[in-house]
Image 1 (cartoon, rainbow, N blue to C red):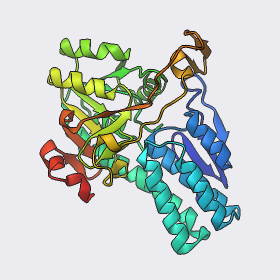
Image 2 (cartoon, helix red, strand yellow):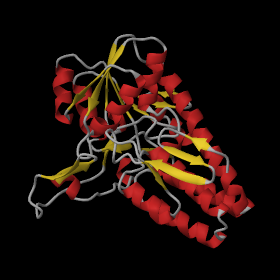
Image 3 (cartoon, rainbow, N blue to C red):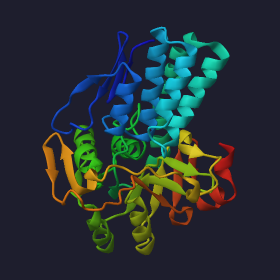
Length: 339
């Protein structure tokens, strides 16, 4: 397989490496990944994360295993093990389906080529999304975003953050409000890191400050990513997104979901059919990262910890995809079913 280099994943000289996002922003440590067990652990621990990127990562690992001579039967088994790691993120399923179709039609030797295609396609999709979205953002806009949607979550420039980067490249003035994104702080740890790298003016806020900012007229537009978009436009994203959409509608703030077509699940009729991953209670009882671990709740405290929530389509101003910007009336007419 050819060398493939992105911000948080790379395949060089026959070895796959992952930038450990759990250690960011204070440590930039690359870790080797040469087995399904390692990839599964990295996905579950969010060392590699972001719906598009975990699909790319799983595909590169399968291609690597194929190059190591792993049998067709074992490759199928390993693909199913990887598929089960993140039930909400449909990009993972889409990538694995393409890899398995290639395996069935052309054999293991074709998997490296398929993985390379998926990697380069994601880069292209991100660029198209960025161009489509940047056209909607006015000069001087204050943008609010949630979780992390940049080059740490994709093979390319990102989805919502990709749009932000394109806005800056166009020379428009902008400022970004960064939701810290409880309970795992992807905004506070990762989006701020990306904003620094992009040179974008930004301010970190607690998630529960967003409504106040909107009431004060300090938010012009909200851009968020997605892990799965249903055929009717409902979508799952990092928990807290639904709250933003409700408050945005009350304050008449435009609310956009930004994602590649690989995030659309045309076979999923609406948000009620999206499986929601439940995560470890310890993530809510405390916090951990490169700074160490802190536990602020009693160990036996009951916890409800869904990783995602579902935002109804009726709260969305537009869907920014690589194929263009879709308005509510287009989505209601079935636009997503034809992608």
